[in-house]
Length: 327
Ligand code: F6P
Image (cartoon, rainbow, N blue to C red; front, side):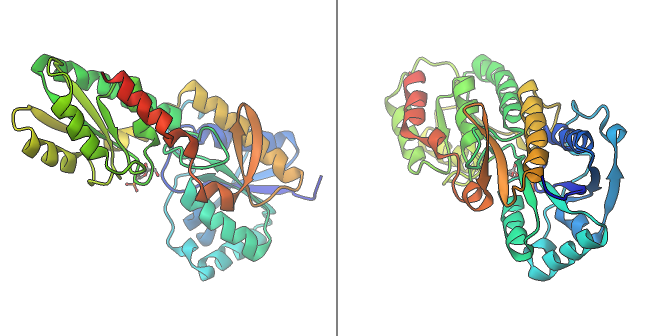
């Protein structure tokens, strides 16, 4: 065990359902191990500005079920600069904070990686992003809730698609990653899924629509916002020109995917990660992200977690599954 006495915790980047459960777990675990905890507001912005508040058992009461993040979050330009990170380090030293737990996605860990290398400061990450695009964990906090939000929304859209014999293009989040589209698309029985990782998706879709069954009343196409054509509306334009006979509508789900009560899976994952992060710091771990692979807790260096997306899921096997099931 090392000499950590006060742990700082922050959420950074896009919010994700389950971040509050993670904060709660960090605070409660720290108290359990006789440590003090400091909440840092608005991610790295608050770290630079010294926006700190002491946290106790009660400050995390009744938050496990709440979406968003009680610590608020931001995408910080200041922390991208060495000057910003230096000021952040000075603030931590000034306030007697000995270690940090950061909850966020790849942008958060890119900053955390630099910070731990530059200042040799103990820092552990918790994967909190709806995108699920980090290596070193099967699932990130927020992904399960987000894909369930998507399938609930698309089930409703399906009613209209079916009643009007329409083709619906539904755009889901995922600027660089198609994992939300992939799983939710399978979950709603989509005709096709267009994702940034699979090029030529649109040609495959056009061929399928040309040669596929003509007796289907409704068709749902799930498009990740970062696909090669540039999102749902652009895909809609291509298909409208190619298939003028189809009655086509586009629906963009947007930020409803980031909000709402976390699912039980996300609450449990966040709780487990929060406790493991505190224990990891106490055992001298640093510069790593806590994750879960095949139900086991694992620690992965930030540099690996951010550079390798959860590649296994975007395998041809999964894409073939979509094709087989959409017959
Ligand atoms: O990182 C999560 C994410 O939801 C992406 O999928 C999406 O492109 C982005 O956040 C949107 O971020 P913002 O809230 O800044 O528009």
